[in-house]
Length: 227
Length: 283
Image (tube, one colour):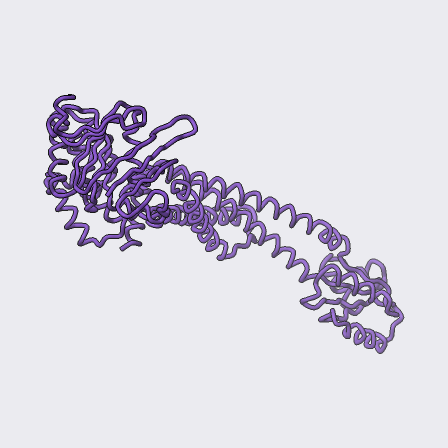
């Protein structure tokens, strides 16, 4: 359902990605690892089509990077949830409204919004804090709100770009557990991370990027030999 | 639902970026007030000129020796001019009385005789109160027998004719210049308020809002800024107008459509400005 065919992304100054051929299956959990600047974020941006390959093709669901029209991109994004290291919450509204916002801007009805927001808040364990403002939340809680917002559209895949980068080990484990739970519900997860402890804790297929190329793909069984 | 959402987000946006909203509204207000002052000046100038042209009269002094019959004939002849609406006969005695009324002096007592000639006071028709007609009519009147002299405010008419076009051109250029400066100023402040909140655009894009939906709140916000700026400028202009009337020039005219026009212009500028600015953040 996500496929990269010999993808390259080049800017005038440098090559961000090259020779990327990769497939992410339905309901899969994949880690993307590699040093800063290896191309993890670029690869994720290609999936939600915030960026387009200069060579090759990316297929996401029924959309292709080579043929998607500008007015189709919003509809692709409703099927792809994205979570960031810096949460990207709106500081002027409470937890409930932050999540509801994702449904309001695609024109959902109020009743539908309410039931879906409450359901997703229960899923991430923050129902009791739904009227809190973001600044009153811990880092881990903020990230849960970010995840809830990404999930509320019921995407088939959740992309997480260093979701634990700003969190302490306990909160990081909590987020990982949440992502695992979401994955068990049938949503694919693609997580870029530096945190190898987490990978050891929950081993999954891992893609190692180096200088914009896929250096290695490691199956969960082989992980203990490497880390 | 959608409109309520846009409106709510627009208002939230104003509150959120309070400082830039205040700057934007202030620049709307100042800009629109300037346009208002300019418009008031323009309509007053126009009114004054119209008034002047409406009052253009041609005075024709008659030869002293004309018999009442000849005078009557002459009057009929002049009345037949298509440009002329009224011909009023002023006899020598009437002229003397008027002179006395205006200057308070009895000419006859001083000079022992009445030196004033009889005359026709000629008023041009509504469509002909313009300099070019006045001159033509005066020239034709001059050729009639029995007419001693034709008088009208030649210098003023010529002066106006000469400088009116220049004045209108200069005024027009200044107005266009003002409008351009104002538009750029207002658009830049709107862009500033949107730039301050590009993260909200980013999130909207991320969760799959269509471009239409992203623009909505910002356009409503722009319209609100324009509307508020417009209403403030109307207040300001009203105060300025009132003050000038009170202290300087009591005849200063004002038209209600200027007030409506300022608010409409504010809304329009807000709409276009926010539309163009938010488009910059959408690919």
